[in-house]
Image (cartoon, rainbow, N blue to C red):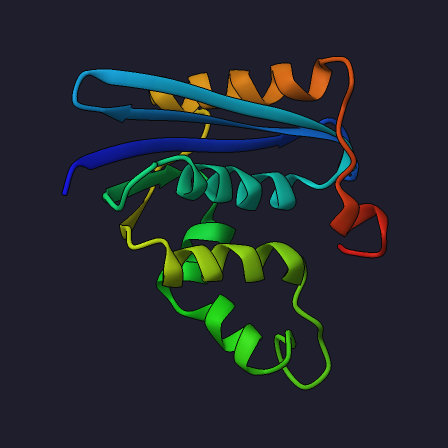
Length: 159
C-alpha cells in the first residue's frame, strides 16, 4: 500500500462568507494540489471539505496521512464524535444538533468505504509549518477566485 501525505486547510473571509479549501497530496516523489472556492460557507465546512477532497483524490486504496490544523476535524474523527453524532441522528446531545451533518456523512462514508488506511495528524496552524501554510495559501486563493461554487449544504439551510 503506497503512502500518501495530505496537507489540508480551509479558509473563509468572514464566517460565514466566501470560503475555500486547499490540499497538497504527496507520494513517491509526486505532488498534486487541489483547491476550490465557494461563494458562502463557513471555515469549519471548508476544513471538512478539504479532508473529503484528500480522501477522494487517490485512485487506489493507500495509507493516507491527513495533516490538518483543524482540531474540530481531527478530534471529531479520532475521538469518535462524528460517529456518535451520526448514531444519535446528528445530535451532539439531547438538545443540540451537530453542525455540518451533510459533510460529516460524506467524510464518514469515505472513511468506511474508500479502502484507505487513514491516520490524522494535527498540526498547529500559522506556526511556520511549510505545507500547512501552502495549503492555506491555496484555500485563500480559491476563495478569492472568480466563479465561486455553491455550497448547497450551507446555503440550503446547513450550518
